[in-house]
Image (cartoon, rainbow, N blue to C red; front, side, top):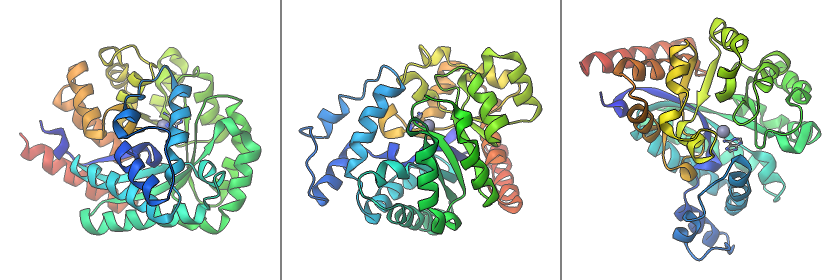
Length: 332
Ligand code: ADE
Ligand code: ZN
């Protein structure tokens, strides 16, 4: 089965993580900045990570070339074109406004560039999508409240809020800002259980009230948690190549994705930071299917889960599910 032809949603994609070395160098030139590496090839050679933190250190450094609305537009447009080629019909883009604000780039610039790119993708590819503002967990709840205050005029341009960066400090400390986001009608997600134990996943559900868990990789260590996630069919946005590159799993052949599916979890496949981890969503489907021997039925189920987990209207969901059924049956 050609999984690239199957309609799917990408639900775990950091747009700054789609910044390819070539584009980073082009934007540096455009903005009169000098990167500390000779060329894209030299930067690419550094993409060997021990863990999440070793990746984040480079990720925040490289994204320093993003300065204007046009930079964010070009970045998101390049990602959305790639995604459309992988069968993505709906994409929810995470972005980290605190990381840009600290360099003097206003959230308004960031959101304007990304929104224009989503409008452009809707026109050129029929792709739907939205923006999810991520709070940086390692900067703590005070800094989250500060950026939340700064983006109040932009809330209408957002689909939701999330939580990312290093898994340090109590996740439940973000409950007040998540409650405010919910009151403003935003959808809620959070990274949890990527490297840290299942406790964070419980807290993401019970204290933050998230509707999806990003990664959730370590859920399988806790039977009661698995039972809860299966009972409520809480979507988990799993990113196989990311987990290998950040050494959360020892090898793709040992990735728990197949076991998660077998337990009845609502798992989806996503790319996380495709420019850093060796592949976009299509590459993730391809590599995971080959390494884990996933059946066509399992691949279809992953695509269906993504459409069911997407923050879309009932009409859009019905349209996308019908497209999936049509493509799957024509594929034999
Ligand atoms: N920010 C970008 N990618 C991330 C990841 N995989 N985990 C946490 N924060 C991130
Ligand atoms: Zn992520």
